[in-house]
Length: 419
Image (tube, rainbow, N blue to C red; front, top):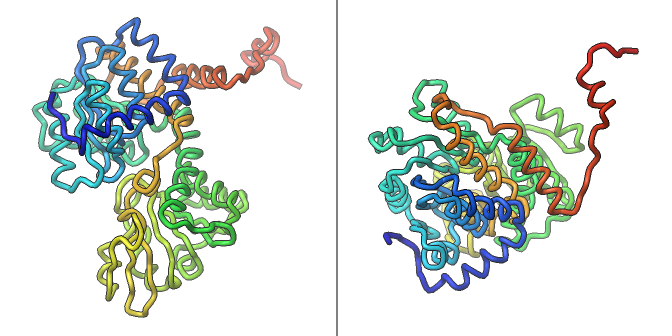
């Protein structure tokens, strides 16, 4: 079996961690049990470009149980858990191409290794694999039945490709499923981002001014959790509707240039480029901490920061680089501007990834069942998939809910009953 991981001797520790996560992923385990019986993915080759974490390993186990012939590579150079990568290869028998800290060339070599598998189905987190199939590896695109996209940034890229009529095969926007973005993006990103910040810095959040750039689902989660830790939270936005929502949720809202002067910790979660720029770095207070929890490392203008600096000290702590500006102020950048929750911590808790990866697995099954009917565009996850995953999650949590009476159901479907 071809693979590229740091050290296969780490597999034993990886298995322990994967099994620990699996205990908190009962919905995915139930789907795996059914997949093992029914084999809905039998005879199909899959290539997945995902964060190589313990939760991802349990998704891969589920897809393999369903009959898929699977290869995985990393979707971010710093998000790989080397123990997990080793276990995927040695314990679970799947080719894996992922090493934490891999350089740019290795990252794309690994994506190409996944495409060499000649997949029928792909699974992406950020759309780098799909983009490669539309540019350097166009010949392999003709075999693709469909693809699943896990994250906001990837869906943005794919919808742009659809608008330009560039898409060559159907894609499912898993990120936009309710059971993904309402929980994974909000509660997962909120908790794991602050976990990454605290692990990297040992910062006390209480009393700090935390600036959250972007008030989408991820930004909402980060702001909520930072306030819960006692921080004074400032939100920056470009969307007036989200700015009003943040205001009415009780957060301070102001432009970044104003927030830059007072913030202690800055977290970007916008999915856009150069959200914090040189004009912002210039006015930050001494000791400010800056990080990103958006998918790509473009939200912070780090080349601009480096030009402003008279001294750059790498690795003052694990995942902390100190940039000393000409005015003597130090700006601390976490995790090289990459996903701080995955680079400096372990990513989202398994209990929330249980729902996201359950949707991934069921969306894959849906694509296979409907392969001859899917138009070449970005598709939403069917609502019944969301409802099924939510109902199963509630059941595993021991929570029951009401059902409509016949009278209530009739009332909701009728137009005749008024005042």
